Image (cartoon, rainbow, N blue to C red; front, side, top):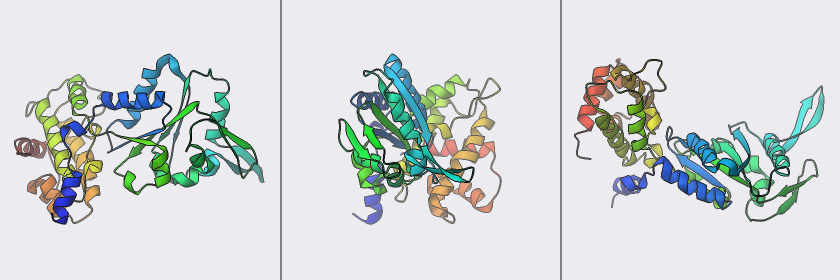
Amino acid sequence: MDKESEFGAMSSYSDEDISSDMSVLKRLLRKVENGKHSILYGPPGTGKTRLVQLLKDELGSRLGTVNFVQFHPQFSYQEFIEGYAVKNGVFDYKEGVFLKFLKKLSKVPAKKINLFVIDEINRADISSVFGELLTLLDDSGDKNVVLPTSGKELHITSKFVIVGTMNSADKNIAIMDFALRRRFDFLFMGPDYAGMNDWLLSLNWKVTEFDVDAYVLFARKLNHRIATNPILGKNMTLGQALFVPPKLSKERVDLEDLFEMIADKVIPQIESYLGTGNQKDLANLLSPEIREKVTMGEPLGPADLVNLVNSIVPSNE
């Protein structure tokens, strides 16, 4: 098998591999109930953050304290665990968000499930941010460690579960710190086509050029092309949110709304995946006509979306 075929085989996946929101929710709920720290990972727009909200709803009265934080490249150990900040010209000791979260747990009934949610967990230097916590998450039960900055004892119990979300298009789990991967269970969230179908119908479909089924099939086949592309793969597919217009002020979704999503969200995302000058792959993923216009900087129009849907949907893929 040549390299391109090998990568294609590694990137391909069947419909059964793409879990719907509800099946992933069921798995995540089971892990949380068993005290397993977990990370939801997948392409942009697949609803990872939304699924955390569904998890909270599912836990209902069993839910105790919830803390939400979003990581970013400048997020530090000082913000997460502890550190010093300059206040009125002097260094002032400050507890991080995680230490503050742990303090709240002493007031929560023992049977409650406490969640520490980290959105975009892969956007920070996780090993540096977690510090001693990464070691303490390795085993179950009560654990203690002395913090180097304050000399305080960090007491970890099994009363909380960390749930993270991760955009796999930004950073594949294969290149993440092995120590982190060993301490978390990873649940893949692919595009949810059934959810996309229901979502579009709820917006009052008024497109006459093609129906909802055809548009959803277009998204599915486009993602199949991305998944089987030798330089992309399933982690670079496009979530349903990139194909569906946001909540509209009007009471219907028309061709112009869909065109804006494809022209302003889908095509730029694909271009960013492929990099500049990769005209061959751009043509293979979309169409020679779209590639020509995008390459030359010519404006696209709603008719281009109709032609794209009508060319991809009948294809034997």
